[in-house]
Amino acid sequence: MPSIVVDDKGTELSYIDSGVPASASNAYTTIFAVHGTVFTSPIFEKVSKLAGPAGLRFVAINRRDYPGSTPLTAEDSGVLASGTDEQKAAFLKARGVELATFVDRFAEQNNVPAISADGKSGGFALLGWSLGNAIALAAVANVDALSAPSQARWSSGLRSLILYEPPTVAIGSALPPKIWSPQIDQSIPAELRGKFFTQWITSYFKHGDLSTRDLDTLSYVVPATFRAPSIYGIPDADLARIVYDPPGSGSDMLFMVFSAAQINAAYKKAVFDKGVRTLLPKLKVFAFTGDVTCPFSIPAFWALQDDDKAHGGGFIETKIVEGINHFVHWDEPELALKIYQDAL
Image 1 (cartoon, rainbow, N blue to C red):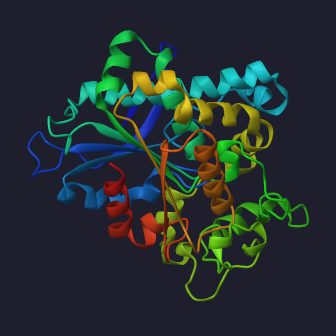
Image 2 (tube, rainbow, N blue to C red):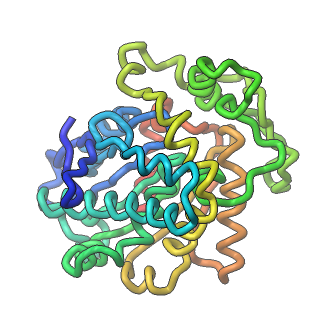
Image 3 (cartoon, helix red, strand yellow):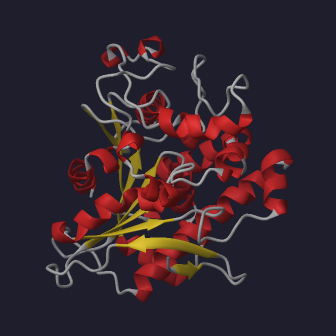
């Protein structure tokens, strides 16, 4: 898996790349995707294979602590576990700057096309999925920390920020009182929580009437039976490349549990800050969720809508997609790609 060095310390982020679309000449848009917890960049392989024929380039990046990318340090883990608010804010800013630098260096090294005069092609989008939304948001929030030339490339190149089913922990909003996950259920043996989670999170859930926006309508624990979990369609050989458990009970867990205030601040800056909007004038923020997805995503979706309204509206475009779960990019990659295209 190739990688790009993103700082003067030799920090690397690995990635998969669909390559330049064969039929697109120099008029194509690039989507940079950031994975969630436990599931790595190859979870986007099905979408990546479809990108070229659709006139897109798709690049999925492995976050720090995941295969091919530089591990976090013991000092980083200490900050996540018991650092001050300032230290945790600095940690998140660093991760955001790393991702923003990756995007800039990839775009520069690969001559990613600029946005066309008619705005229909070129440029790039940043897609966060699940917990990866927190890092995608931090990247946008900290573009102003890049060099002037890098800021200029982001300013002229960023088309959209796609928020693909962020859970509440990825935007730092309040956890629903009834929230449950195998990862945090202490009654489940520690060695089984990860395996349980990878099956549970890929399931489909039958919720109540979502139009009520009532948290009590959500099915928090037991998946539905009308469709098998997505993981049942992933061959074992692929699972070995796609699933990487350690951060789920390690750095990602610490990040989710103890950095809510910092995550929320980065989200608010990325989406609502006037300075960011001035720096990134073409930025469109598009958030979507499925209606049969895991119970993490829907409360966050409502929180995004509420925050947008509180700021006067027009900052976030939102959409509920019928019939999809947290893994539409695996179960229905054609549909996933269509949703991404609509967000550009």
